[in-house]
Length: 135
Image (cartoon, rainbow, N blue to C red; front, side, top):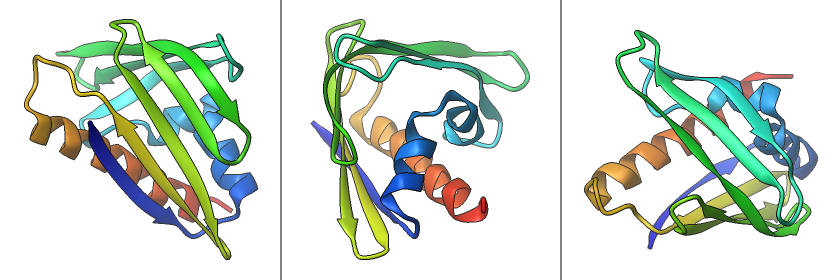
């Protein structure tokens, strides 16, 4: 399992909303400046589906990150299963006026674990920057 985390200087309401809303997901869900998320759909409920289209801005590469939710505890936990049956979860922990986010997931077999960890850490770091920059 791979674990990435960050602490966001924002309320749990804002952090949760920005994590689950497609209009916000499209603004922070990328690991490198050359990438973006041109499309996102999210049905946040048990057995609900999610799909994020992730692509290089120059259109040279891309993939869909998709699966379905297996457990939802509002403001605390989102667990999911990807199409290839790998699982993951995002934990939200209120710490005063901040929220610690921890994501744990099964790595894929194709890419190095260190690359996958760095990619996902960059995404969580972008999430922090985005949430903290928007009023």
